[in-house]
Each structure stands twice: as C-alpha cells, then as structure tokens.
Length: 400
Ligand code: EJD
Image (tube, rainbow, N blue to C red; front, side, top):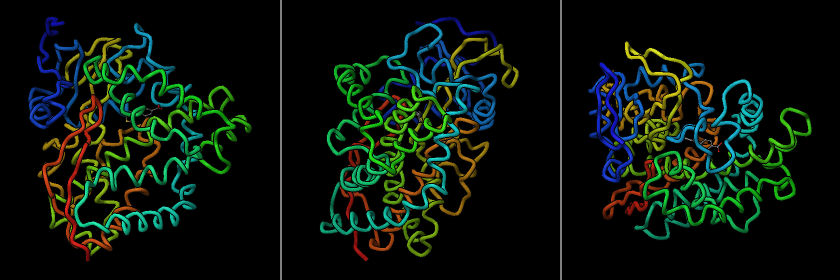
C-alpha cells in the first residue's frame, strides 16, 4: 500500500515493524528524527513523530490526538477491535476518567506502601536462590521470575493458569502493530488465552485485599459500574506483566553492559530508582504506540488531517539529541525523569509506581549481593511489535 506523500512532508518507505527494525530500531529512529518533526510513513499510510518535543506535545494534547480510536495501527472508527476496548488505554475523557481515577488510587505510592517490605524480602529470597549459581539466564531467573512471584499475588489471582499471562500480554502488545507474522503466530491461542484472562476478572476469582478485589470494591461505592470492573481488572493483567519484565530486562542488560554504572549503584543503592528510569529512557521497553487526529492538526507547520493515525516513537524521543545530552549513554548521573517511556499526559502509565517498586526491590537485593554482573554469552532479542524485549540474557555474576 504505497500512497503519495502529502505535500511538504518527508516520506519514509521503511516498515517500523519489520523484523530487522525490531531487532535494532536505533538506525531508523535516527533517520525518522532527522527527516523532520513530522514524517509520512508510506508503508502504512500513517504519520509519525520521533522528536522529543513533538512526541511530548502530542501526548499532552489528548483533545487533538485521541486514544478512543485505538492506540494501535487499527482504526476503531473503521475496524472491529480484536477484544472489547480497554476502558483506560483506548478511551478518552470523560469516559476514561472514572476507571483511571479508580486504578490510579489503587496503584498509588501510598497504597503500595503496604507491599514494600514483602516485595523487598521476596527479592532478597529470589536473589539468594539464584546466586546458588554464578552463571544463569537473567530473563528466566530474574526478570520473569520476580514479577511473576509478586504481581499476580498482589492482584489476587489464583495460582492455576498463570502461565497464560505472558503469552496473552505478548499477543496484546503485538496486536497494536500491523497484522504481520508476529500477530499471526499468536492468533491460534487468542480465544483460549482471552477466555482464561476474562474469567480471572470475575469478582469471585479474586482474593480479598488484592488490587482486583479493590477494583470491585470501587464498583460497590459507585466509583465505576459493575460492568466496568472486570475490564479494569483486565487492564492490570494485560499491561502489568510483560511491561515490567521487559523493563527489568532493560535495566539488567544496561548494567551488564556498563560495569562502572553498577559500581556506582553499589556505592549508592539509593540510585536504584534513578537507574530504573534511566534504563526505561535508554531502552524504552514500550517503543511505540499510535494516536488518531481528531481535527486537522498543525504540528510544526505540517497539517495532519482529521481521522489519520500518528505513530509516536517513544524510543526515538527518549534518545533525541535535541533533548538529551549524549543520549546513547546509560548514565546514572543524568536526570531521566522527563523521559516519555511511560508516556506523558493523562494516559501516562498508571502502573509506574508498581514497576518502580519491583525494580527498586530487585536492584537493591542484587546490589547488596553482587559485585559485578557481566555478559556470559550472546543476548537474544524477543521480537514484539510494541515491546523492546530480551528472550535471553546470559550473565555471570561475582558475588560480593
Ligand atoms: C499499554 C502501551 C489495557 C492496557 C493498558 C495499557 C497498555 C496495554 C493495555 C502499556 C500499551 O488497559 O488493557 S504501554
């Protein structure tokens, strides 16, 4: 599908979801940023923003750049979504606001305080177990093991079927992209995985005191309707697992590749949170998502027509040299807090405090016990249309 470029817009023919680009998106990111503030991506007949300033501005202008038509390539105005739309992600104000307020409170730093001690203890126990060996795959042993140990329990999920969480999430994040081979690979299990996930959202499946039960209690208070409650639980199960796993993969890979930064963390363990945000900036575990123009909207002198999809390149924005000094350096001395790796504006990641707590617990436990962490083999990427992920991170550690 090659259409003619609108006048005065730099046109790129590259497929941002081609496996070579997913394997290493950095060259295309630079090309997109340098082409101009707005680009036209002829392969999908969509627009793209890759510079920090324009990505940030678009994400904070929800009136002009809606989410309600879907944040994937598929335009919900014309195509039926693969599942009922998320009440948070794929909604705009005012419909978005009540579910968001409910989840925001349940996942607030204040509400998470009661989990902190247990999650730190869980991280210490896991790291002690893992350190029985000095060489292991950090993906299975740590980045998957830790979130799967703490998060489903915090939601209140039963034990059976938890192995469905990762393949479900992986497919959901592939489904934001085009219907390429990655989506085709997930398709045969969609009905089965969705069936399991949807069943776990029912009130009587969720244990008392968990995030899930608290969502249902919000519906008792009338903050959301009982019809909305299961879909808000579904958001936790969709967005809360793969994202944190790949963000932890990003930070562990970053430290294995930058031993001097690991030494800094060991000297000053209070840097764990900065390190995690710097890794989210540096790697951008969520690489891209779309918005849809609600009007003819002028971006840096280019008009994006009403109804058109715009691809937001978070990863490119997070390494834009126009915004970041030495953007390719993973550096604990910078302030990464303005990164757009968690998005920006009213849809900004509602689970970011959960992610930061998981990371802080795991990094703190590791920093106290491991003097050096180094690559012990070739890391292998896991390709996903939205997520920048590792399938395998072989490491060797030197216990302190
Ligand atoms: C997401 C890009 C949901 C949901 C929420 C957020 C994401 C995915 C799913 C995080 C997308 O509400 O189901 S980063």
